[in-house]
Amino acid sequence: MHTVRKIIHLDCDCFYAAVEIREQPSLAHLPVAVGGDPHRRGVIATCNYPARRFGVHSAMASAYALKLCPELVILPPRFDLYRAVSQQIMAIYRRYTDVIEPLSLDEAYLDVTDSEHYKNSATLMAEAIRAEVKDKISITVSAGVASNKFLAKVASDWRKPDGLFVIEPEAVEAFMPTLPVKKIPGVGHVTEQKLTALGITTCEQLQQLTRFELHEHFGSFGESLYNYSRGIDERPVMHTRRRKSVSVEETYPKDLAHLTQWHNALLDLCERLRQRLQRLDHHYVIQGATVKVRYHDFTIRSADGPAGPITEETFLPLLTALWDRRQDPIRLLGVGVKLRDEASQAQKDMFEEEKRKALMLRHHH
Ligand code: DCP
Ligand code: MG
Image 1 (tube, rainbow, N blue to C red):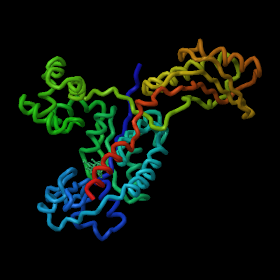
Image 2 (image 1 turned 60 degrees about the horizontal axis):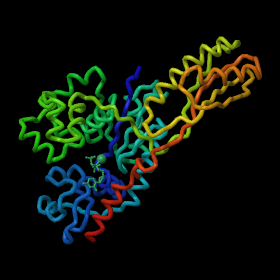
Image 3 (image 1 turned 90 degrees about the vertical axis):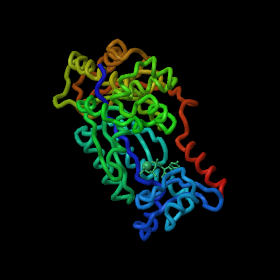
Image 4 (image 1 turned 120 degrees about the vertical axis):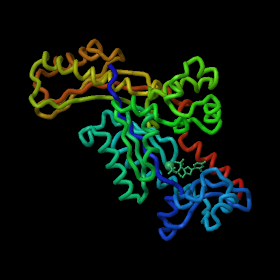
């Protein structure tokens, strides 16, 4: 059975502008943008909220932004600085889980389903992360907490800036119909116009369309729209730091003295390992199996064997081999698998998009 996942989407507020304002706090109350030269057909990368109140936004021509807001301070982008700040922020995220997928310099998904922090409360983790980034990096981050990537991303946008929004699994059914279609990530201007032409502005209306109709109008994105309008999204969080192994282990309050007790504990650990592996993306291939024990005197022994299904057939021979070597009580038992990563090309460089933007902007200087 699938466990309900716990996903956090984190998105820094006005990221490039926030970094610049951090470097120069006297700018905070002025309308500030980061972007290309207005005299050379430059465009706005982003701007702070005072500037947004004038209607300035990302991808707008800098010259037009100045027409809307003559006092606008337009700063040239400093990508190396943003990258350095991004790395510091991601390092904070990484302390809560290693299942982390950065989408850009200022955005990441975290899967904290297996994280032990804050008694596994994703909401408390999200608040702690936001507080820590604000405290240590002086950047505000908005967070969304939900059971999948789509809902978590929608949620992080809901209370922007400097906000947190949680969509509990029980709340999804009531929440989805009210969601405007333009809030669906991936629905840009063109798709929104098409939907409006069909008389559709909310997910409640979107839910009325069949898979077939959606496919007819939107091609392969139609399938996503069908699922998203119902709050469904099975996409796993893709680690960028690829794993070489996955394991689960448990320290027992009372030592396990006999092979039958070892065996019983093994069954439980296999189930937990199976659930973990289900949440990995599909680019991983299992290469080998491992069992580890820690005896009452704290010495550790492990045994490795060939890959197999995540059941006792694979792990029991290894456990029995350890028992045959030393028949003593153990305080800890662990099971794991070695992984081979087949992602290679499929894995996109997280900086690819930023590099493209950087080139576009420099082109205008
Ligand atoms: N960016 C860009 N060009 C765009 C959109 C974004 O160069 N068309 C850059 C600047 C942003 C950063 O990427 O600071 C992150 O993009 P976001 O869409 O998350 O926008 P912001 O973080 O700036 O604002 P928000 O508070 O809405 O997240
Ligand atoms: Mg952002």
